[in-house]
Image (cartoon, rainbow, N blue to C red; front, side):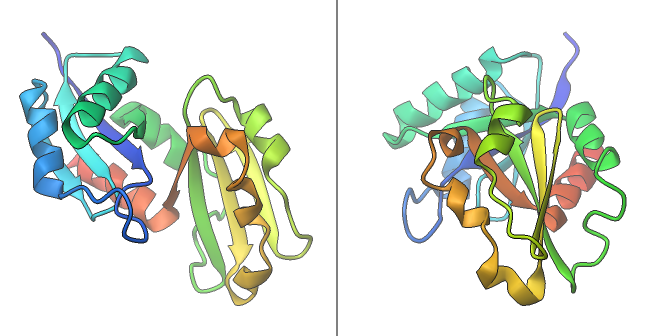
Length: 181
């Protein structure tokens, strides 16, 4: 059976001392579920793997396995190599190109949350924040010198936020490079 390269983006682990999940244990869960070439990148829940499983059920399967192992409900967003390449290739012109000027993030959306729904809760401060919606992702950029004035944190208390996970643009592009290696 053909296998596809994926990245699983886990929401809310190892952040601020909550939902601590050791990366070795995380890899073990994926391997025991039959996924191959499992590796992790940094401590914030990025798991690269190869699998013959496909589709939206893959996220649900992984969530169930993680909940069983760690006794914590976790939101998982899975993107294939092709999907992640599209996120990077379709970014707005210049997005992430000036890391000293702008802090740039990819906000990955978990179905059924759509980009249009997500954009309804994205609040922008004029002259500080910019956001663009695309298929399965919202690109969010704010002036680094004025990050404290950004309205990005306004999404945290919304129900929609429960179906999102955020990665810096640097992490997003690194994950793509790792998947392509």
